[in-house]
Length: 304
Image 1 (cartoon, rainbow, N blue to C red):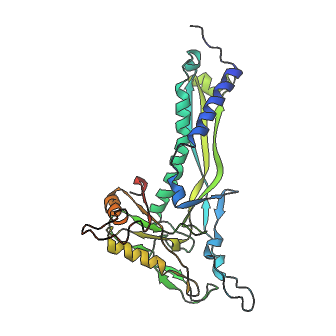
Image 2 (image 1 turned 180 degrees about the vertical axis):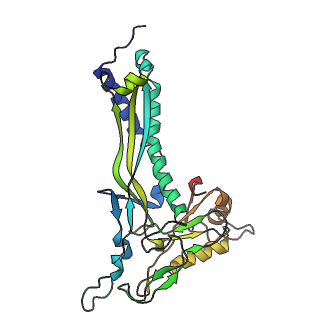
């Protein structure tokens, strides 16, 4: 069999094939993160979320406009850079053995979705140890809520966390405009090749051509008021306690926030109990289940 001449045209055609496959792969992954988070653009090395101190709400306009002093606090999230690299042996060009690489490139596209899912759901777990906009852990027992609408006065402490030793499960309110979590994106996914057949150190040293995928962004906490975490055993009583606590959350100035949980996120350890509580139409005694489909159930190993 004749050896394929590796010209710029041959490499350009192969590049088109694998880039197209990569883009197809971006459509294959199930974007579970979109169930609980919102993508937000990033225009620099980081995003500053000073606006999180102001849960959106109207008040009666008496006197001048109300400018919250609490907005002076700032919560910043640096963007992170992620990469994945696909090498193609030169001998596979020589032997016309390239068919497998379309599938590989498609898998790299799908792995972008895996990355976003991992960032968001791992970020939820990080809420037990990472700070959000008010200077507290995202899931904490002492979030400050102020008696005056402008964020002044002596704060009371409000909890959005049940302490315990079990696997974390989380109630969320996702149907309001503000969100409990954000995925900031600085650079959209891309897939580019280093393909010059006459001027590539990689070809010379390792007899390989290389394609690289990259994405830049990060996970960010939104409003803690839209989330409630628990490490207590998942049970009807603990679920109802968390659900009711969220409905009673108030903002600065003792203003009810009108929050109703709509999503429950659990890991493998709580899957069976959650399915029985939320997805069963009837109770073991035959009576109607009052919690049937009360919230949408999201089960993911990424929160385990």
